[in-house]
Length: 305
Image (tube, rainbow, N blue to C red; front, side, top):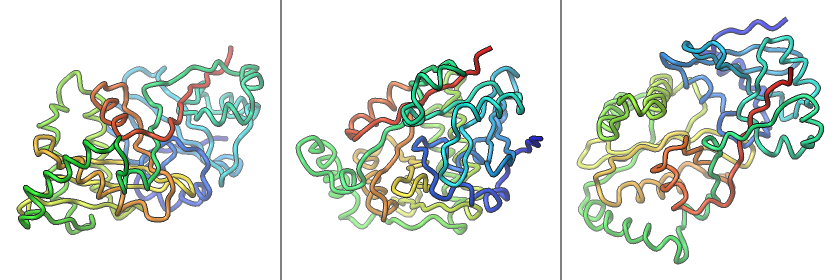
């Protein structure tokens, strides 16, 4: 029997062991992210079953819009025929955020025996080499370096900039900045649902920051928080840049801070996952401008009737 219950911050310690050697490279498989993405439209639930952790998504509007992630089980991949059993027992007939590597591993023909495979392009993740973003070498990053030099000249060299780790002592300042960022981006507008949900997830993360295994930094200009970034472990050699917010109107700030995040938040990792663009053209352009090494394709598996 599967007893699903709402995921809450205290569950992080309880369920964290399932994510040891976690093998799926989509950002949806970050436990802290699954817990924090909760708002008035959406929430996550979890259940333990046969040495696996099942994470489900439910929407308050549209009861048919519900799904499971792939089971998380100490680095093991659950074969398609077992997914069928889980779908039938749980009542969830769809698995979302299925990385393309899962389809490749078990074979499209085997999966198509049980499921329809549908692309989820707005949620493909952008993956970069940590060294590329930390060093910004070569002609392809010349514009980024120029913007960084301008920011250094106008702010850093004048002693106006400081960077510090995020901790319980400064999360309130980050939350205040998040509200300013939201106003600048009009993220509470009716046509900006994804940005509003992301803002709420970031606020949830900051509010419960000490409950999770996260690494974060904030940047102050003249003592005021003007950017923050938070990373979370994903696989043994990859971490996600779960949140990266900066005042857009300050020239060169984003480029300077992005470089600082790559240098300071990803020690010991080969790959930096900047998550998806959620189908937002401006985000797609920004993420592509940093020349991803590869994309992690996202799929939906829908149980055949």
